Length: 398
Figure (spheres, rainbow, N blue to C red):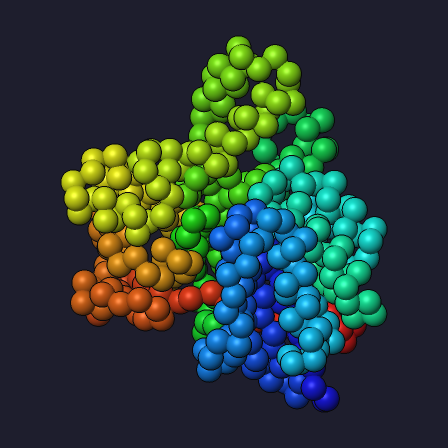
């Protein structure tokens, strides 16, 4: 097979991350990675480094808009100094009820994904913009949408159906699940010895957890939107719907416009809650840990709430799986926050989850369970970009 450079684009609300892989001859070699951070500010950062971590680009430009940000990426990739991609894979958080399969991007597909932007309002609008720009700036190069929801397509109806009137279910209101590319990468790394009963906790600024049986998703914490499930950096997680009604009524007292009131409620749920809302300090676990050391009680409560919630979900999933063979921590907090892993697992001994303190004193890939633990506990960083490359290669061959 000839050279097959594949570009991966992963856009967020304030950043565009990208990587370039050589995927020819069955290989998967990362050639470079980079990002534009600080979109919407005068304090942007644009960097690219090669596989040896050598900086190829290191700039601090003003990045007032996503248009400026993506032009920086496109210009660098089209400069002739870097390998030109022959295909592009885009991480798409949610395609709604009608876009369930990974597939080649067309203008009509982008329009369809955009029509369900409300399901992932922090992610879909910029992803839609980047997909349109990629088609324009890289004419003739095939682009592919790789969905976070794809992994969760095996969820049974009892898990996906919301307890709401059928008219709303018909509109696509259901549990979709997110972080699917991350979960898929954990299964990929565990092969060929994927345990029958597996729980994976993807813990970062966005946090979720999934119950997986024989490599297929049985249940997952995030629901209609990424704000469901576990408390996250700025998101509520699952919450009594009466709380939302109460907050909405309070907002409506000073905001008679219904659409504006709904936007304000969405901001509360997705951007002002979670670790930030409880701590009144930060959504960053590192900041909260420092504050706890300094005696900040609100930071302590926020972290306790985070760990307590995850432990409850693990317990419920052990029941759903009728046992557990392995628990995996992944994501930024899951990989790097030693104390969160210890605190989450501290009360789970009755479920066979026993963590060894010395083994747990690590960041990155490791087995952290005690020698006598009936359940294996591991830390495995996700390989999301690699999974996107694998899907692109498969789709190119179809």
